[in-house]
Image (tube, rainbow, N blue to C red; front, side, top):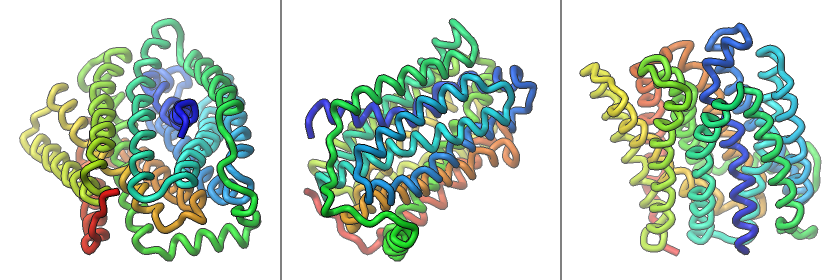
Length: 394
C-alpha cells in the first residue's frame, strides 16, 4: 500500500472519531443552549451511532456491488452536507436527525477502509494493516476532543461543525486524487435486496464471525459508555472545565494509541489470536479494578484516569485482531462482512450510551459499573468462542 493511500485511509477513518468526539466537551453547554436535558443531548450520540450502524449495513453490500471509489466519494460529500446541517440546528430534534445522517455518512469510511485492506491482504498481513490503520486513526480520539476544547475557547459549539465541514472537504479532495478502485468489475456482486440478504445470510451463518462481532460490539459499547459519561464525570463530579476535560480524555486515548502501536509490533512475533486473548484479559483486569474502586468508594481524578486508560487501551489489542480474524473467511464478501462488524460495534454503542444516564447515572460509580458489566460479558463470550482455535503467526 502506498504511503499516500495509507494517509488517506487514516484520514477517512478519522472522520468517524472526529465527528463523534470533537463536540464532546460541549455536551453540557449544548444542553443549556438548546434548553434540554442531559439525556436528550446524549441522544445525539445515540443518533450518530445508529446512523453509523444503519450506514454500515447498507454500505457493505453496496460497495461489493459498485466498487469502493464511487460510494466513498458520495459518502464524503454527504458528510460535508450533514456537518452543515448540524451547524444550522436550532433545537435538539434537528440536531439528532442531522447527527444520524452524519453518522451514516461516516460509516462509509469505516467499511470502505476495511474492505480495501481485505482486497489487498489476508491473514496476519491483514491484521497488521488493520492494526496500522487503527494505530494511525486512533490518534483521532486523542486529537478530536483536544481540538474541540481549543475551538470552544474561540467560539461556541457551532465552530465545531464549521471545522468538521472543512475537514470533510479536505479529505474528499485527497480521496479524489489518492484512492483507486480496488475491486475489479468481474469480482463484484449483483446489487439488489435478494443478493444483500443472501450475503448477510452467508456471513451470519458463520458462528465464529457472529461471536467475534458480538464481542466487538460489547467492547465498543463500554467505550461509548465512557464517551457518553466522561464529560459529565470530569466536568461535574471532578469540577474540570471543558478544556481541562479534554486533557484528561487525551490521557486515556494516548494510552489506547500506544496499545495499537504495540499490537502492530507484536503481530510480527505473536498471532492475532494470542494478542486478542491478552486484550480480553486486560479488559477483565479493568473490570476488577473498577469493581474494587467502587466497593471502596475510592473516587478521584487520578484513579479514574488510570482505570479508564486500562479499560480503553485494551481495545488496542482487541479490535484490530477481531477484525483480522473475523474477516478471514469472507474475502468474497469483504464489504458485507466489514459492514456487519461495524453494525455490531455501532449498535452496541447506540444501545449502551443512553442507558448510562438513564439507568446507571452519570457518576463515576454509575459509568464504571456499566462498563464492567459489558466487559465481563464480552470477555466470557470472546474467550469461549476462540477456545479451540490455534493462532498462526504470518
